[in-house]
Length: 358
Image (cartoon, rainbow, N blue to C red; front, side, top):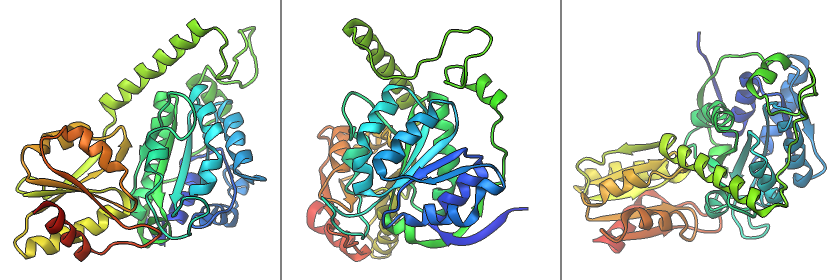
């Protein structure tokens, strides 16, 4: 029987992590995502599943704890909010370079700098263009509901282990604090050491049977070998782009104008679309679920069928650049957003469509 609960998005992340069989969580409190750790501490999974829940000294410490634990093949994760995730970027690059699966959660707040504790989507560039150094990518999932906050924990871990690469859930303060009904996933046990050794033979889990040592590192001083490593990563990223694009289309088939939005912005756009259609203005909504890999082809396919596209984001204009690349000049593309933690209304979105595209 399904277990249905009313909870915040942040709380859903915590419950889903326990139920997935996560081995460890390492984090540091920061608004507006602190309920993730608070819920884990309240649930005390170390007494039931054996899951480690540890508050690190800082975000730098927590991401390096994730790095070390992920190197043993364990399912480990962290969560933070924008300034905290910025502190993690060196570790994220190391984890990507060492090809380690893990899950990162960013419940975005406004910036730059310390900024505000209100919702924002201004970490798009940091997430999909590489916030750390080097040529690497993160599988980026953008939930627009509390249900997806819960569901994407399992999806993020599964994709991370499928491709041996870090994945991130890119949420925002609105979804993190929003309370909705959520169907919680069933409990599944943590993997045994034997199962981990079979699933992840690369892991540093203790040398047994005279095999060669497994070395977890992103360092390579021979440039010829390092180039091959980079080419290997690029091929893996190509496979992810080919197989893992996810998006949702609502009212697109007969739309005259197309809204493109992710996360909380997509929820508001859906209401704007309903109001506009009641007034005779046919709007459609394309919601990227994976911000990387980006639904470039889906947007390109719509470009010749609409009169204009509005990229709606809680930032100064970031995803709009990828939308323009997908469209390649075939139709007009504009951006609409609010900054500083202010959230737009459906009426403001409709007004932006009329002002910028009509």
